[in-house]
Image (cartoon, rainbow, N blue to C red; front, top):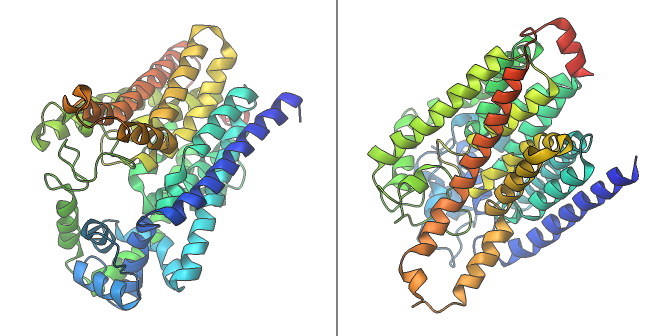
Amino acid sequence: MTRARLDSLYLLMLGCVVFVLLGAVLERAAPAPLADFRVVYYPARCLLQHGDPYNENEVLRVYRAEGGDRPSETEKVRQIITRFIYFPGAFCLTIPFALLPWGPAHMLWMTLTVGLLILASLLIWNFGADDSPAVSGILAGFLLANSELIIITGNAAGIAISLCIVAVWCFLRERLALLGILCLAVSLAVKPQDSGLVWLYFLLAGGIYRKRALQTLAVTAVLSLPAVVWVAQVAPHWIQEWHSNMAAFTVHGGISDPGVTSSGGHGLDMLINLQTAISYFWDNPHIYNPGSYLVCGLLILVWAFTTLRSRPSPRGTWLALAAIAALSMLPVYHRQLDARLLLLTIPACAMLWKAGRLIGRIALLVNATAFMLTGDLTWAVFFAFIRHLSPTSAWLSSGLLTAIEVFAAPMILLATSIFYLWAYVRHGEADGSPRWSHANAERLSS
């Protein structure tokens, strides 16, 4: 290992240390620690007891019977925990944890979450360090050090995104293909909104990648079908109940409402999808939803067309994944935690930086800004600073604080996706070689 690569690894390890130690300290001090793990744990416990996991009252009964209800918890936290909004496929991951009592279950969940996210960061660093060890180490370490909410909340995004990245490594290195298929299948079953467009890239890319995508889809169906049948037996009206739970969260002023009056869409773990920015001007779902779908749909169409007409290559693949990683956050519900998927932008940034010139500097600036404006520590420091200001400050009363919250993350994600999409289209236009050949596949896997 070269000195530059070793120094880069030290930077990544520093980020790991900050992530683990600071996350553990803040988790103990949090008013509602591991709230997002409880979201998936208690409905799974309810299902094991042949209860309806989508029925708020039945989950609340299990929650209280097992001592999960805490006097200090607010009604909002209790609502989050007892209204299950995941699809039944998520039980393929959560049922094994629900077989255990809370103590060992939450320790095992957090160990798996932290271990997988660190592993995913190391795998991405390994790709990026081939082109620029310094850029890869700095960005991966900074993103990890800025991800404490994963530990504090225990959100399933930590596992789902990490499994998605492990699968990307397996597919691109052409190693441990079965492991990659299983990892991506579990990720799709748990958080399809995070890994779905990454899976779509492999489907559209053709060749061995399309084969892996179709195999993944089959495994996802095999993993999800037993849970769907099980849920349908104990809760025949689960689809209507799921819609009811979603409506309770997305109602005007609800905790998942992207509008400016949202009770849980701003502050730490804020909503980062494009609807939040549009709602600042038009707080109406009949406007901000179609607006988001239109903007993101056009970008996805350009990305898909470029993928279909270009042959797979290491450079093109990473540019495509960088563009779609940022774009995945924008069209539908996503929170700050889901932005860990931006790890997939690091190899593309390192390649562009190695190429030099202006595009490399822009790539680093875009990535650094995206990591900062979607990071946990960044916003924690910002809000702590705001609290020390006079509440009568003119700039606060004018709504500037709200504007910063609703625009910062979605706009930098939009800028990141457009930048990497532009670089991807340029690469596709410059590549006049055949769409796919066996020789291409061999070069890509080497």
